[in-house]
Image 1 (tube, one colour):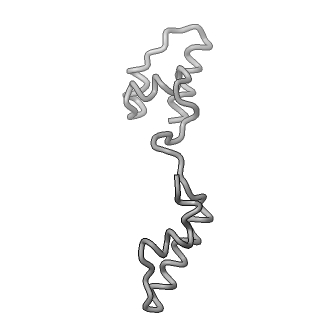
Image 2 (tube, rainbow, N blue to C red):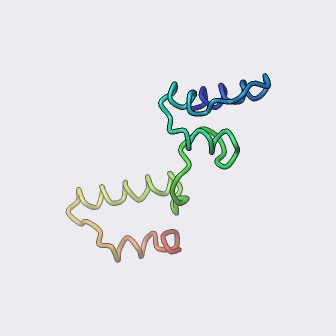
Image 3 (cartoon, helix red, strand yellow):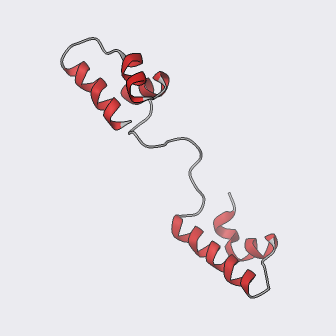
Length: 92
């Protein structure tokens, strides 16, 4: 994706006509996706869809570890118990 964006921006800087479809096909990217990235409607070249996460990756790892440990000990947590322990962070 970054290479395709770079190719488009390079063509823009040299004053040539930017052939988005040609570049998109060359790099195997949908033309509409490349257009949004090149024209600044979506920033960067990484995946940008979906909502932001509620838990940080550290909190998510902590939650997973607690669920695994309790399950291995024979006491899997119910949904209510998960909300009691992590509820402040899970509530919208």
